[in-house]
Every structure is written in structure tokens, then in C-alpha cells.
Length: 216
Figure 1 (cartoon, rainbow, N blue to C red):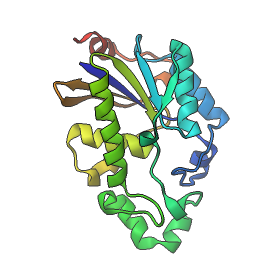
Figure 2 (figure 1 turned 90 degrees about the vertical axis):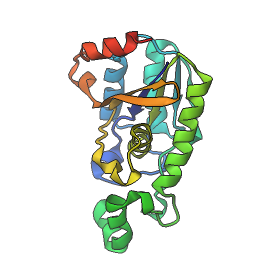
Figure 3 (figure 1 turned 60 degrees about the vertical axis):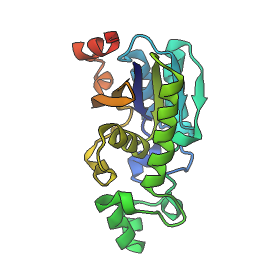
């Protein structure tokens, strides 16, 4: 059984400003670095075998904080990069909606059908990210892996794991440094926890996490 810990990056300045980041390489804010440090200090799993990350700095910084706690290097994987929002990157919700109202409505109502202007669609993101996740599972039997990525990417991975239509991806919340737990059993995936931010209140996760760790 391979165990996956999917982690969203910490807060960035653009998160606070409501700007669409996509593949713009925006670093963590001071608050984001604090969140990453709190996650590393209160990580819900005692043993980690490998850490993978999107190459974008906000995810990599978050992964490196976890890596420092476990004395593990971080391997970057371009497949876990956030969606390319194309012309939307650096713009706010209102700015995008004013110029591309139909496409912007599609983003929230049918993200599975969207292709961002001069960018990607979430179907493309899911294909590359889920393909890489499945490859890592096969390459790391009975290991515990951390994947640090982005809200959009992780939502597509959770939809894949749940067998849930991608059009419903926004029903899954992903806060900054949210922890999600997924177990792989005989080529099947089970989601055991989503969007936990207990570490931000300096609390430990409950005994269900310990049970998850001890399963064999």
C-alpha cells in the first residue's frame, strides 16, 4: 500500500490580492512561510519516504520546509505545475470577468470544458498530474510520499481518486497548506482526509491519522 500526502502551498501575496496565479512564479508571503513552517513542525505523519513538488517556487518552498523536517530532498515534477491561466494570470476575478465573461463563467460552472485564453484546461492538468501520481505509486510500493502542489492540481487529483466528474472539482475546498491523505490499494485509490489545516492551530490530527499510518 502506497500512501500519498497531497499538500497545497502556503499563502502568497497574490492569494491575498485575489490575483489568478496559474504558472506565474510567485513566492510565498511571510504568512505563507509561517504556514509552511507550522505544517512542517506539526506534520501529521511521522515517517515520509520521498517528497515531490511542483517546480513553482510557492510549492517548492512549502515542500522544502517539510523536507527540512525529515532531512529529505525535494524532487520537482513539472506534471504537478498549476494550470496555465494564460492571459488571466496576474488579473483579479473582476478584471477577468469584465473581459471574458463567458469563459470565466465556464471556469466555475464547467471547468472540465474550459480552455483558458492562451492557456490550459483542467482536463489537461488532470491528465498530466494524475498520470504522474499513478506512476509514482507504481514506482514506490509501500512507501509514504508527499506531493506539494496547487489548489487546482490537487482538486483534479482528488477528483481522479474519487472517480468524481471533473465538472464538480470546485466542490472540494483547498486552503493554503491543506493536507489531504490518499491510500493506494491494489490499483485503487481511497481518499481518507481532505483539506485539513489543523496544523495551523498547533493541534495534532486525531487518532484516525495514526490509524492511517499504521495500516499495512
